[in-house]
Image (cartoon, rainbow, N blue to C red; front, side):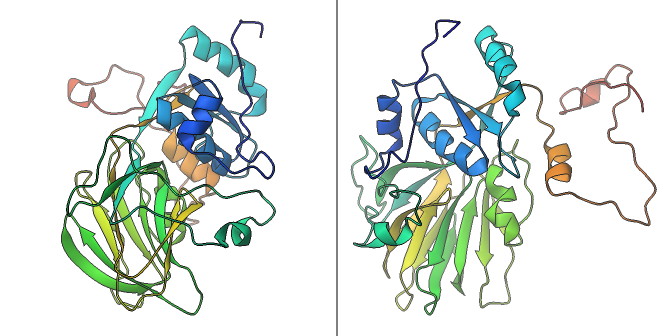
Length: 323
């Protein structure tokens, strides 16, 4: 208000009213230039879903417990907003995923009431992407993006998910498993990591596929190139498969259905107050301990002399005073 900038509160739950698509939420808020979230990574993902639709920037205020995606603490909000207005903040872009499917996703009757858990209505199934008619053999393009991951998991505890996984159009393996995770590098530190997947730098583009409790000797993660789609087909004798996008259930698949995840054309614009210290954050958030057999190591390595020409293209920490 002091700067003459309008601000709208976005309440994605709104009591018992149906939840809206990201485009509808953005339109109702007046198509904001900046989305600010207060919470943990889950809250940030809800804000990022809205920001991604209109190319808005997203700033996360961490009042959660982990905070891989959030940037600042509540005490820093005023200074951060001033920096954004003055153009001093850095905008960092992150890769997202989008989907094509053999048919539009839908939600079976009764699923909404089953999954509320006192939190309010679930999101609707994604719509078909505007201007993208169905093409024979290529399925329908879904109007949805994922910053973290797309998860295909068994719907019933007593029925495994039977899933064939194709990478770049080639069959990798058929799995009987609890779930299959397709993640971005940003999402590699979320569910994929908990399932044994690798940590992937968020500064790169890649598609990370991780099986969860598979009944197969090959239980490894595959990191595919950014131009290689990962497609999941539900096999004939599989139980029904739930599709969750960034932790939100968005549809249920039947045997014979397929969904392909691949890099979205748009990228999320994250507001950063300083260069991302991803590995410092990784060490801090996961409370990584040093080996008791190792000597103490300094917290950084960056000589104060000018950067040699052959290193000038690398991402380096800023100069700091020696400890």
